[in-house]
Image (spheres, rainbow, N blue to C red):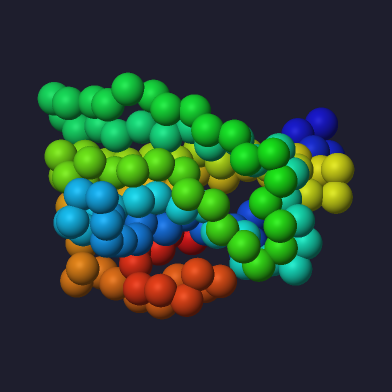
Length: 131
């Protein structure tokens, strides 16, 4: 029975941490984004995020993006400097062509930093990417 269940593989969807300049605060800050590098729209994107370590954990945050157009991105949340030292997970579920997809994206502890910068697809900016 289990062999008959098709679990579609998530491709072309990423979570990125990007450092941006906040004009109001006159400082740099990290933000997490969901990136749709596919040629099709994603519907009902649900994201559950949390950070944890051996002795610390953040609150669980839930986010929803009704529709994420092809070759686009959306901000998930601001990442406080303190949570960058934690393991940050983003559980992402979405519908594509009436089929549900699900994947967990994990930023390991202390991996969100400028040394890990790479070009983020679709956004065309430097940041930290998990596939």
